Image (cartoon, rainbow, N blue to C red):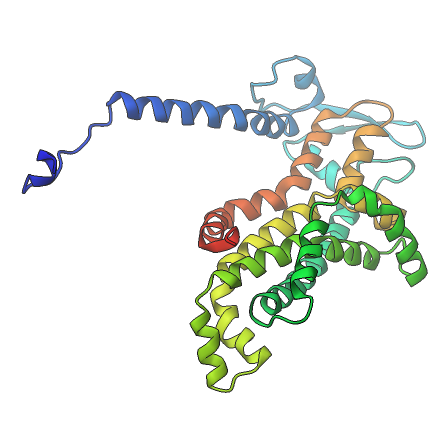
Length: 315
């Protein structure tokens, strides 16, 4: 037993200037600056006018604004007074892709609709399936679980053509419902794996006690397991919202032109802009597109870590 442990006054306090602590905090600060610098550049560029952007000082913000000159789809030059919020307004309501100049607002709403439907449906189905696999084993349940695990590692690109044929035969291809259906299907394997492993880590005595009291399948799920599944549900929500909102592949393949989500519109802004290249508007559109995942992480990041530690990766 160490002398420090026998000291009735407890261990001596550590000073902030100890070299181990200085090394750790220096590394953390440098790492944070390294990863936050691109975000900082995107934000300040979105508030600059084009003249200040052309000056070449990407790290220095500017607070003076003048006139902006843009080109409409007809090729006419349009001049207007710029404000600090002008790039963001143009990104939301005026930026053009092809002959359409409605900004990214319609596509933002498409992404909201797709996410709002896909997340709860996929989580509800995966939660019920994971609960059944962990506590209500049936014939070939282990084989079914193995298929789910294998399915979570199959690249999405392999299944694109079969899914196109399936959704076309269902009559939902090139609709928002099609994108919701595809996201739900492809999200089930990994979510079911998370919920199954989480429920398997809970004490089996809880399930047996509920069965002794006469509770059935749904009552045990809603009254016993669901209240304890909040941490893993938080993990599932963060994974699904981030994956669905940031998805480009399924949106461009299954949505159809009127239903393109935010990511497809953002790609079109960068690749199909004509006339003057408006870097500030492009950076503003990028920040708007990334605002939802950033907000999710800022609000629930600690719950994500808590959910992982509570058994999300336990077997």
